[in-house]
Length: 182
Image 1 (cartoon, rainbow, N blue to C red):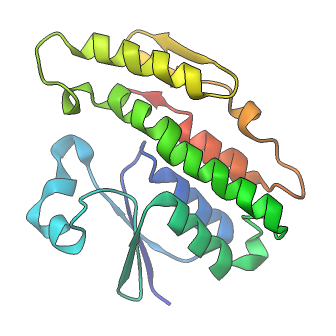
Image 2 (image 1 turned 180 degrees about the vertical axis):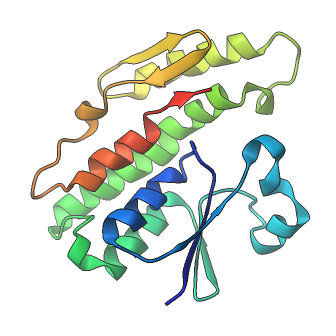
């Protein structure tokens, strides 16, 4: 099986990179440079019309979205135990992954690239401050610290603690969304 992952460093696409690595999968990495808009090139749009990352390609078949990719990895490499076997714990895991994707990521993307939201001169600081404030309301710990010019999501340990029923990958998933944005 040929597995390829299109991702950009310091984005939510680090989560499937970590999952594939934890699963012991052999995969090829295609790192895209978002700062140079490599994800918007005609070449990348041809293979991924969404022009986003992550994108997983398995034997020529394409899949996007972190939750779907995590489910595929966990089912393809069950010995890695990336997602618990218990149906309730599985659902809780999917809930956490979905929350990271839909609850936190929109704020972090605004912090990382305020011009994507509003290109008006002088608006970046206001956008970053509002995104950090909103993110603080959705984090379980309520912690979201700002340090000029960085914004760091804090409280990874409140998202999950590794246990035999809840493997380390959940903490690493949380770590993938807990990063300094430059």
